[in-house]
Amino acid sequence: MHPKLEISRSDFNKLTGFIKEKYGLNLADKKSLVESRLYNYVLDCGFESFSEYLNAVYCDETGREMANLINKLTTNHTYFMRETDHFKHFLREFLPYAEKHVQDHDLRIWSAGCSFGNEPYNLAMCLDEYFGFRKISWDLKILATDISFNALRAAKNGVYSEMSIENIPESWRKKYFRPVSSGLWQVSDEIRNNVGFKYHNLMEDFTFKKKFDLILCRNVMIYFDEKTKSYICRKFYDAVEEGGFFYIGHAESAPEDMPFVKVYPAIYRKIGGKSK
Ligand SMILES: C[S@@+](CC[C@H](N)C(=O)[O-])C[C@H]1O[C@@H](n2cnc3c(N)ncnc32)[C@H](O)[C@@H]1O
Image 1 (cartoon, rainbow, N blue to C red):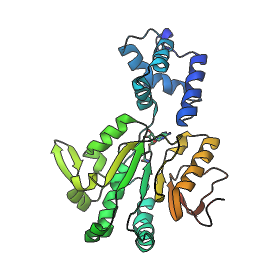
Image 2: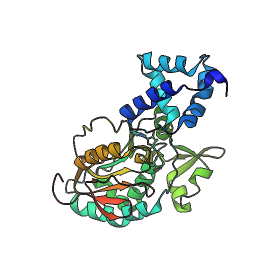
Image 3: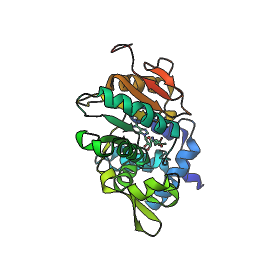
């Protein structure tokens, strides 16, 4: 790396402190990752040093440089049918429960940290599979949020490579995807219309009008420290209906003061009162 393009310890500490406070991401041990993700951009834009670049980020009142920085610093790895146990639970336990208990037929599902949209689209396919023609009497729109505008833009398009839809069962590929150009497939309009993508930062207030029956926050809190996980899980808890469910990634650990009750690996439930 060019000697000038090494981020100084003080610039790095300031940056990681800022990112952690504003977005929850703990990058304190990831100096070379941060450098390598920003390196080309800093060079391509003609900045003389990381310091100069970071000043431009902090001073940019439009927020565009910050959004670009977040696009680069977030890890958006995702794929269809990820952690299939969650989809099995969704189809076999969550949906039968919801069908019985959600009296107003307004089912509220939130994919928090949805990245390129594979997770919420996968859920929408399950909803279609489960409800079939009964879908008409339900409001089944899934909320899908992220802080990466880049990921959200790709998610809204819903176009995936042949390789990335490999895990999808053949019958679903036929039903829920259409070829758009060589080797690229787009999620069908019906499934795309079932998901609403929005920018939302988990560190900010949750101001949703209605509570959720299910929240998924899988492979997101893995980048947060214990205190941040605890803070966010408490907010998720308040945002879930009594009896509702909460899925986290199987490789993630819940905070010590997790308010939800664990019912299966990586599956939690809000049982027993409003506040614990
Ligand atoms: C590894 S992806 C997980 C995608 C999907 N949930 C899955 O399990 O396949 C993590 C996502 O969390 C998002 N993320 C990180 N911090 C966030 C925050 N503070 N608020 C909302 N999303 C965040 C990232 O932008 C990234 O797209």
